[in-house]
Image (cartoon, rainbow, N blue to C red; front, side):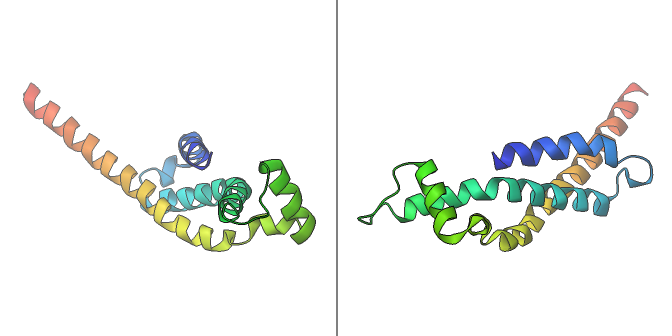
Length: 124
C-alpha cells in the first residue's frame, strides 16, 4: 500500500507541479518526494501498526484474532492516535526516500540528455 501510493502520487503530481521554473530543479523534486513519502506514510501507518502489533502478540497467550479485533482493541484501550504512534520518526526517514526520487530524476535527466547528444552525433 505504501509503495503504491508513494510512486503513484509522485508520478501523478510530478507533471503537474514540476513545470516551468521547477522543471529539473533538484530541490523542488526533493520536496515533492518528501511530501509524497509523508502523505503515503501517514495513510499507510495504521495498517503497519496493526501488522506490527499482531506480530508482537503472536508469542503471548492473549492474541488478536484478526486485524479487526486488533483495531478494536487498540483503539478501545489506547485511543485512535495510538495507530499513529511513531509516525513522526517515519516522516523523518522519508527524507531518504525523497532523496532517492530526486536523485533518480536527476540521473534520468542526465542520461536522457547524454543519449540525445549521442544520437545527434551519430546522425552527423
